Each structure stands twice: as structure tokens, then as C-alpha cells.
Amino acid sequence: MEQILQRTLEQVTCVLQTYPERSVETLYVGGGTPSALDGAARERMLETIQTVVTANPAIREVTVEVNPEDTDHRLLAALALVGVNRISLGIQTLRDPVLARIGRVGGGDTNRKALSTMRDMWSPGVDRRTHWSADLIVGIPGYTLRKIREDLQKIIAAGADHLSVYELSLEKNTVLGWKHRRNLFQEMPASEVLSQLHGVRDFLSDHGFSRYEVSSYAREDGRGIHNSAYWDMAPHLGCGPGAVGTMPEPWPVRHVVTGNFRRFLESPDFGMDREPLPRLQFMQEVLMMGMRLQSGLDDSRFAGIFGVSLQQILPETLHKWHFFLAADPEGTPPRWVLPETHRDVLDSVILDAFRELDARVLEDPSLDRPWSK
Image (cartoon, rainbow, N blue to C red; front, side):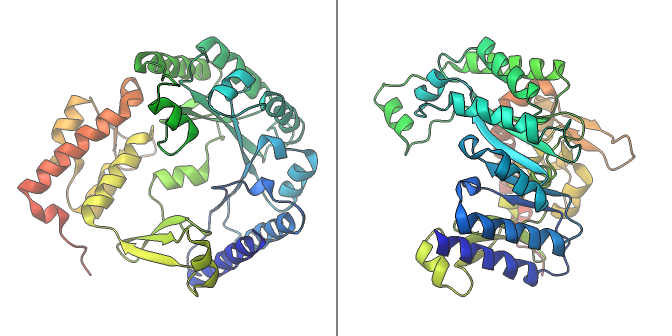
């Protein structure tokens, strides 16, 4: 682990030297359990964060993922000292029986203690510069909307100004997925999950949270800058085994760091592969990400990248799902926005969009032409 961490920090330094002309606006430390590091490894992580923040005055947001079991006053104080101003806390639920149902035993008390620590150390009322987010999973059998609302109330009372709400996902290569395939775990009916999502949306709206992305709710000034940039397809790079990023060089190139630890440690380039993205794939990603956002898809930007407007390429999808063309109050280019009433069935919207896109490409193969050099 110490070698992997050291090599990852070396990659961070290398990336910053490779792109000196680009302003770094956000830093996200996660994708794993950075808060679980202790001793010399934790100190090395903190030193690297401070070095990056000091060398990049344009940084507006530094986020670290923190496990509830690692949340204590000492860790939070150390993170604040090196420039971290946002915490992402993995709560999921405050109830032991619900955690046990999805294979996570005995975390209710730990999660509640973490909320108490966050309220004391990191809530906006303590320091207006700090923000923190908690995630919550819905669609778990036995986890009723009443219980979800009670948990949300406690999380909000602890000072969270951002909530990420996800549906339970049954991954194939997990214990829960194995149980489901053998009828040892039954999924909640889709209609009940949808009812829970609507209930959560209404509850959070009543408490001052706006839904700025399909799974993300925030109070004023609580929106995640890093995640918003990711959904807007801004250039970004990831460091460490398995990390992924996308950069314009000048056309989109996917940077993928190997997940093989030995190659990561021994390769001069950290085992990073660079894969130019085909035009059609990048178009799909821009559509999928933009549809997630409350602000919608920037019509002018889309046309500028792909040489065709959304109205030209997806007329049927835009009509069927009642997309509307909304002008920004500040006069920026208009954006195609999916109505709130359809955002909980986003997968169906995207599927229709991709089908129509495939049909357009069959009619006009030039839409998937290579990038101009």
C-alpha cells in the first residue's frame, strides 16, 4: 500500500508538470478510502494536498472522501489545515437492519457518531468556507420512505448542504448480486423505488435543497464544483491505479491508468493508456452527462463540437420527452432541458436518444467521421 500511495503521489506531480498551462480548479481525493490511511501514509497524503493547493492558486474546491468510521476531530482538523474545503461522507443509511440487508453490518452507531462530529467540526454554521455531502441509498426492501425521511432529517440537522441519493444497484460480482441470482434477495418493485425517489425529492425541496443533477441535491452555494465540471465534460485527469480522465488533445482522448499494481509501479508512464474517443462515443457521453443536469445540454456547445445541432440530430427524443429550450438569465446560450417530471426515468430517455442517434448515423455516416487534425 505504501508503494502504491507513493507512486500515485509521483503521478500527481508528473501530471501537473505535463500540463503547466492549464489552471487546476478542483482536486478530488477519493475513488477509494483515503481517510482509512494512517501514520506515514496519511501524512504523505496531507502533504501532497497542501503542495498541490499551494502551487495552484486557481483551485476553488478540494474534496476528500471520508468513511464514517474514520471521522474524528483530528482528521477533520488536519484536512482543513491543508486546504480541504469539502468532505464527501459515505453514510448510505443510519439503520443497522438496513445496512445488514445489503451486507454491511453494524454501522448505524458509527454513522450517527460521524454526523455528530461533522456537526461540531465541519458544518457551514461553524465555517462558511466548508461544505460536506452525504450519500443515501433508496430502494432497499424494508427501508421505507418514512425511515428515509427520518434519516435525511438527521443528516440535514448535522449540517450537510449536499445530498447524493442513489438507487440500490445489484452488481453481478458481489455477495448481494449472488444472493439475488439465487432468490435469496428480492428487489423492491420499480414503482415503489420511483415513489421513494419522488418522496425524497419533495422532502428535500421543502428543506431548501434544489435538484441540480439527477442524483444530487444541494442548498444554495452547496453544489459540488468538481462533480459539476465532470458532468459538463470539462477536461480532467485521474491519478492512481484504475483512474480515468478525458483531455482535449485537441480532440477528446481518454486517459486510463492500469489497474495492474505491478505495471503501475514499474512503468515509466504509470501504465497509462491514451485512447482517442470516436466522435459517436463522445457524442453519446456528452448527451448522457448533459441530460443528468438541471441546466441541461448547451445547444451551441454541442453544435460547435459536432457540427450539428441537437434539434437536427434528436428531434424525436426532444419532442417525446418534452425537452424545452431554456435561455440562461445571464444571456448565455440556450440549453435543452429535460423536465423534472421525467428525470427519474432518465435511463429510458437516454435509451431513446441513443437509438435515434444510431439511426441518424446510419442515414449520414459523416456524423461519425474521424476528428479533423
